[in-house]
Amino acid sequence: MPRRLKPNFYLFTSMLFMLSVLCACNSSAQTPPATSQPPENNFIFQVRLEDASGKAITNAQVTLDISGIPPMSSDVDARGYALFSVSEAYRNKVGRITVVAPNYAPYPLNIAVSEKTPPERIILSPLVEPTVGVSTESTASPTVAANNPTEAAVPDLVRQLSSANIPLSGSKDEAQYQSIQNGIIERNGYAALAESCLKAIGNKRLINPVPLDVINAYYKEAIGKKRTDNISLDEYTDSNACSQAMYFAWVDVSGGVTGESKTRTSFEQIVEDRLQ
Image 1: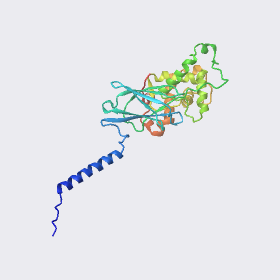
Image 2 (image 1 turned 120 degrees about the horizontal axis):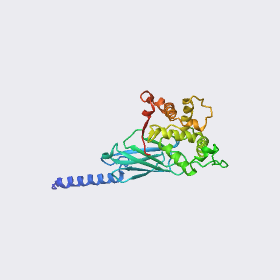
Image 3 (image 1 turned 180 degrees about the vertical axis):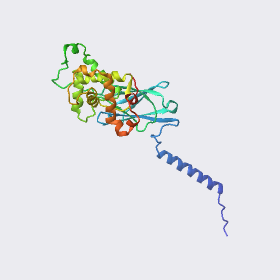
Image 4 (image 1 turned 45 degrees about the horizontal axis):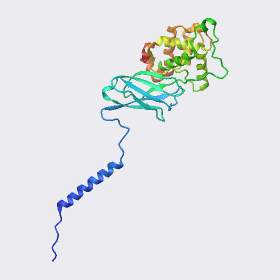
């Protein structure tokens, strides 16, 4: 009777161990690391770039500068988002956001860096050229014309409006946007209103975007006029009426929709610090 071979138990277990190691290595090689999760002890801070109609702006770069760490830059994705992986040590610290996008006014902003949902919306104002054939000379009186800023200062006025969270228009009609931009260049009522709004806001900004053309309608009502009335440049200098107009315009486009107007009942409660 032939002798039965005893199985080599140690050889068998060694082979199983080696096989399990090979399988594990192969599996990890085929599975890419998760890139959507931030590194340990980091969180994702994000902003979304939009135009006045809410459409995503994609051809742009956003820089985040927080004191104590090197500045970080992020290209905007196809949905308009710029994402940053930030150390937990800097959660809720104030950072400086700078947006550079072709054909849009630069947008500097001071903001508390946090994991905000939904993310911070940044409304960019386009730098629209004057309509062909439209003069950039002021049509106002000689006294007003003598005090007009140069054309080079016009983009700065638009940039300051953007920093204050005041897009030129809430309309999806680009012609309306261009009309207001041209009006600012020509130094009409929108330019005077813009300056009054910026004076009333100071170093603050509105907590939600409020279009200048909506503020204009409420401003006329605040000084006892009808929305369809034409008013002079001198009538756009009432800072108190401007603050009141910005508040009621905010209620119209944002606070009344979200219900925040029940708790935010004054102009002072709808502004926050911004980068000057």
